[in-house]
Amino acid sequence: MDYAPEETTYKGLAVQFMTSNPKNPSVVIAKGLGIPGKEFEWMFLLNQVGFNVTYAPYRGTWLSKGEFLSKNNNSSIVNDVSDLVRFSKERFGSEKIYLVGECFGASPALVTSSYFYEIKKVISVGGVIYTSNSKLIKKYLGDKRDKTLKVGMTLKKSMNQRGTWFNGYKGFDFDVWINMMYGKTELNPYRIIDKLEKKELLLMHATNDNMVTYERTIDFFKAIQNHLQNKQSSQNIQLKIMGNGGHRTSFGNEEKLYMLGFLTDKPCEDIIPTLKTGLEIVNNHSKIISRPEGESLRVPFYDLVVKQIEKFKKAGLLNNNPLELILNQIF
Image (cartoon, rainbow, N blue to C red; front, side, top):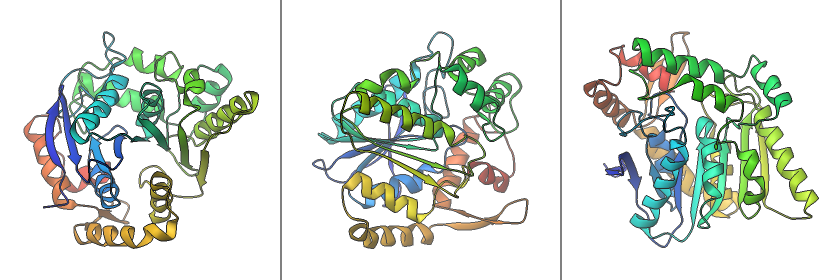
């Protein structure tokens, strides 16, 4: 299956990767939390337009060894993304590396980019942008659309009681999560805004995101704009706020095209043929299932996702819920 990523381990990370051309830029994906599965479509489409692509679950989650946000190792997330960057440099020899951070992965992607000159571009998609600004924290945590605290409780419950869906993230400490929510973390990208001056940034969010309020993205964009104006500096920073797409279903083809245009520096019309071909392949390897509320759900690369779910179950990481319900949790 040429659409299936290769697999290896790198310093304990369960890495998946797809190779294009060593001379081409590489993309490192910093995903959100929850059950993996969405990454297959992301990786495939990025590879289709010519990128080498790398992804791995964070240490202490799923098949990656180590601990996740433990009290003794609460900086592990930046280390994880940094090691994926190093893997990309060693495996592909790319002189340019781009980061795509989704949800939880957005802040780690932004912060990690400040440590590598090879990282030229960063995309934040539905990002949980941490801040120590008490006024902003109060606004976010008081917003019914923002469920970041609830996610932490879900992880805590899965640690102590084998949660409804999965058997915890190893080493997870709820106090560390709370500190992150209040910006007491190296994952806070506001503290490295000055180091982002030489990076090209694309910040994307949907207004109907019911997991992470889109105001986190807007406020961070404003902070960068103010910084650049004060320094009389210019930078390629773009903000794209969508009226739909939510959080659960991610973004549609228009948004995918926009992201690929940003990464390739090509006009959208030049990318459309390649994206169309890629989406046709994705659709040919997808399956339609039902949601409990009666709607239909498309599962890209259904066979790959199901195979991965079985791996998780065999490793004791995923509880024995019906397959269709697990797929509904992923997508």
